[in-house]
Length: 219
Image 1: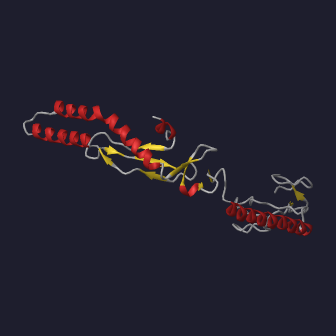
Image 2 (image 1 turned 30 degrees about the vertical axis):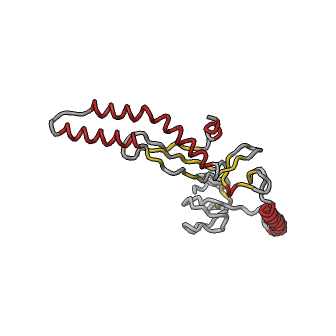
Image 3 (image 1 turned 180 degrees about the vertical axis):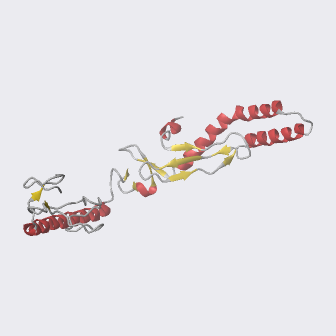
């Protein structure tokens, strides 16, 4: 049926064929906000009767040490024979009801709920956003962009006093704590970004060296 094709991508079949909970129910969702609406539950009498018959027969035959699988299967078969047509009829009723909760956008062909529908334009809010909301959003974007530009300019001015040549260690070489460029390690207090010096001649010793390259003193 054509209605089923229209709703083929935005509904969930929650029907149950057998048991005391047998019945028909469908859940439809908005293609824009994903909010859902469920059709009223419709009990499937044949499926419930089959469940009751199966339980009753099994209990009765169990008293005599026998099983009633044949009768139970027959009841399930009768319920299953009419389930398809009953489900289709219930689905059509659910679609007719859902059409009062959803609108089909003629531009993008999506089904959207009433909260996502621009009634004045006859389009969904994705295709025809609310003008007042867009204006406020644009004002906020403009404010944020201008503040960002001013903050960037202020950062450029502050950069004039930042010593870009000063050595900085972001991780302490002794305890591996993140230092964020501070002169002393917050984890162990190690003096950071200072070149190691030879105890014999006070010359700078490259990191990782075992001996001073100036006098040969062992570190």
